[in-house]
Length: 354
Image (cartoon, rainbow, N blue to C red):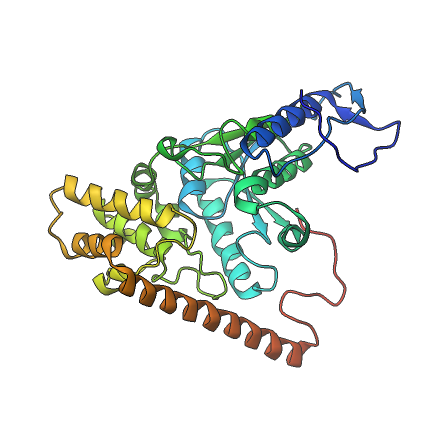
């Protein structure tokens, strides 16, 4: 194992689960190999705790946002999974209570229809992490999900983390098939699941009534819309479902794709994913003999537009960002004036619900 410097002080009598300690050390080594200039730490000297007999009759959980990846992992492991875990404070900010309430309502219906129990978690980790932590997407978010999984040990013995990337796009990332299992303990097995292409995932979702009734893919969460139907992630999903002749079965997305919106998609909001998925959708359209369709031409235009048009698309995207932030602030001001607190705050805050 490698040696690094950290300033964390552990009491001399600290005891740690042996499997979790070994795995965390290997995770540190892996992250250091991936990001040699960004990670430091020491494999701390603590006492290894002998594993205690776990509670009986524990279930199996899957992190669940209502998106393509989480629905896919839940459906492909439907007979094993007993619980789905929805976390407030990750992709939906704590102060966006309107969207959270709608998401909880729909997720509860999806869980009921799938025959699963819903676990709700609330966290301010994104706010703390923004001030103190390393890059969230590339290094940290998988470890945080694993932390929740370990906290749920009295209730579950295995937790699935749905894959963000398929096998062809695996790169060092915060959640990864090599990294996620290293956060396991003697009580909880953590599994990275579902490194399949997005169209393959959508094909399974298209056969599921709960998925078609409650799918949530929108990243535009400054809004209160469940799905806006206009952002790159909504459009990429709509195109994929349309390729599968399933868009008209999805209740949460528009059934018509506007080629003008496709031409103006901002493809780099989440790194290279937008461009990759646009390329995949275009390839799939061509493979199905639809390479001359309006949507195919619009995708080709979005992928190959020049500097001037790209600058105009970027300016439009930034205006939408500013507009969303201003709308978010206005809602907070109105809520404060009416209730004496900002959206999402409580006069007497209690512990996170689990």
